[in-house]
Image (cartoon, rainbow, N blue to C red; front, side):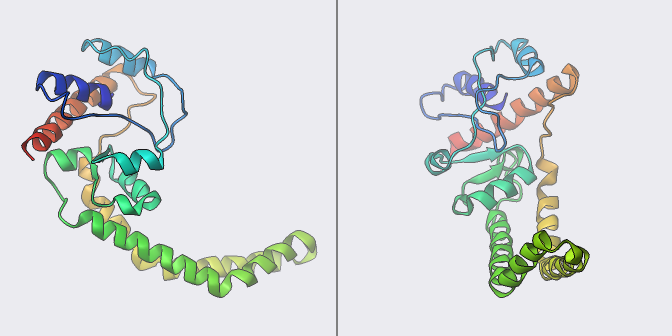
Length: 214
């Protein structure tokens, strides 16, 4: 819905030759059509979604895009986990349009994710062989299964404890962005889709106006 609403706004503002838009999903089923509710809602706005097909986000798309907008803070975090190099061009749509918590936020989020990954790698380097040996013994020696399982849990608890500061900070950072979320209406009523489409239209116009000014 966001892609096609954006095209309509660009056409109205005579910006369709300057700004190109495309949509893709983080967990898309490639080739899947738009939902019936989405088609009905946008049809009422003069937009035909019958030919739309889902696309899974690719590294090439991330590399080529000048800006990447997500609908939620959680999607922004997930995208930065996959593509940390994109931290300077990833925004929650409403965050960008309202010029919200942008200054340094993506860098802070990326920094927390980087520290988590470093700790995971360090933890694996120190304890990985032991954990692998325990997992193999668990499969081969059933009588030791409970003892090994308890020890594995203790290793996992140790890792969880080491990551607690980053996990707490990650939740705080996502909380700062959550007010910009546009929830997915999938599976809900047409009224919910109508509300989502209206919110998307406002957010897209705000983002495009800012982009045009810059």
